[in-house]
Structures are given as structure tokens and as C-alpha cells.
Amino acid sequence: MLLHGRTILSVSDYHTLDERFAGLPCPTATIRKVFDGCDWAEGPAYFPAGRYLVWSDAPNDRMLRYDEASGAVSVFRQPANNSNGNTVDRQGRLVTCEHGMRRVTRTEHDGTITVLADSFESKRLNSPNDVVVKSDNSIWFTDPTYGIDSDYEGNKAESEIGASYVYRIDPQTGDVSVVCDDFVKPNGLAFSPDERLLYVVDTGRTHGADNPAHMRVFDVNPGGRLSNSRVFANCSNGLFDGFRLDTEGRVWTSAGDGVHVCHPDGTLIGKILIPSFA
Image 1 (cartoon, rainbow, N blue to C red):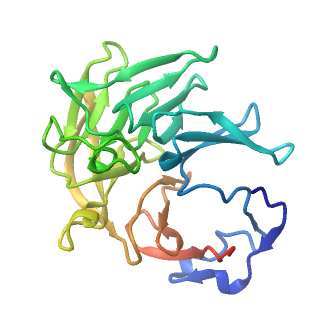
Image 2: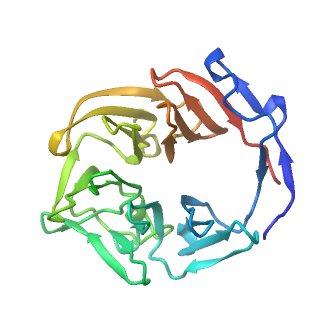
Image 3: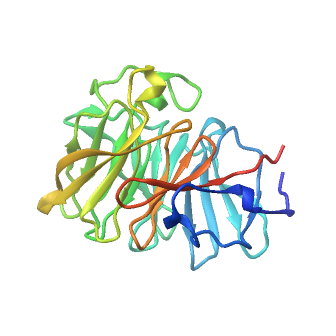
């Protein structure tokens, strides 16, 4: 159902925890619910030239499209192989993680689909979850088991790899390599504005109370090597998932109660509490 009404954020919706949060949210900003027919929505990717947003509704095996000019929501692709995370590459093409087919694909400008990765060392990937493209055109993605844990958002199966890794696709050769192998359930990921840092969420808490519910950060070295792993922030409400960084290196991440904003030093400086639209 498409809703055209707006909810204006009040002062109480901005939870300031540090003076460095002051002035970041626009006091006249509004939230508009554009669609409420998803089991859960994931992986928003915005195409500025067309003024439209594409996102995934994995359990319902479809991708949806919001037209900014008209406010209409329509089906972009169905079936969609239980797509999850999406991003836009440097050439304006859609890059998608597919749980159902256990692969990362690219939708070309003519609508055809190119498979970028579906295996590692001759073993099928688990269920690629989120993806980001670096300025050198390398593609980085996470591969937890959520899409093969059950039939709810993919197809239940055993992991052929036996672990959940973070991968890099080489922009020249297309080779897939592991860049990090010590996550429980790697999830959202993003680069800092200068691409010297890579942030990766671990939502391992879904598979054990003692598992991580945090975001880690790595130094990015030449050739795609990562080093100096450290915990950047722990999630204080629910789990982090998708996120991005602003031009000043602040992290704006999803959490259980809304959007959490972290300073580059890892301090949670504020929250944008998302009101209920029930």
C-alpha cells in the first residue's frame, strides 16, 4: 500500500548523545512511508538519473521500484531469486546479492543479467548478503548463511564452504578471493570516503547469544588486503545491518530503534528514532 502522507520528525525523534550530533539532522526533515507490503525491505539502491529507488523484498521473492517523481511503487523484478543487498556501480548498473541462486549479479543497461560470482574454489557460495563497489571497480560482498538456513528467504541447504567470509571480486580478472575469514555472520559493509577503511557488520548474534552484534573496521592495503582489524562500535539496540558513511566519515547505520550515527572515532553521537506507522 502506497502512503502519501508525511510524518514530520519532532525534537524528541532526535536523540542527541554527544554535542557532535548537533546540527546534523535537518530540523524540518520529514519521513514518508512509501510502501508497507514487504515482509521486510532490504538493500535500497538509488538511481539519481532516473530518480528512482530499487530495493529487495527477499521473502516475497521480488524487487520493488519507487518513482520519486510520481510517488508510485511498482514491481521491478519478480521472481528475483530472493535478492537481498543491492548497490549501484560506477557505470550506473545495479549489482545484486541473490540468496536463491547464491550469487552476485549485475543488471546491464539493456536489462540482461551478468553473473559476477557464484562460487569460491569450486564450491557454491552460501547466500551473498550485501555488496559495495570500490572506485577501482572491485566488488566486495559478504556471504553469511541466512539464505540457506531455511526456505524463508532462499532455499534451505548445507553450506559447501563451511564458513561465512567477506570476498573481493577482482575488476580485471573476475577472480573471487577471501579478504576476511573470521566473521560469524558478515552482513552490511561500506568504505570510508577515502577508501582507506572498510567497515563490516557482524550479525552473528542471530546464531548465538554470545556471538557478535557489532561493526568492525579494517585498514585497506594495496591489492585489496585488509589489516588492523578492530571493533568500531557495538550495537546498543538490536543489530546493525545496512549502513553508509557521509563525506565526513560518520557512519549512519540501521539498528533496532532507527538510525544510529557514529563519529569516526566510533562514538555513538546520536539517533534518529523512526516512529511507528502502524
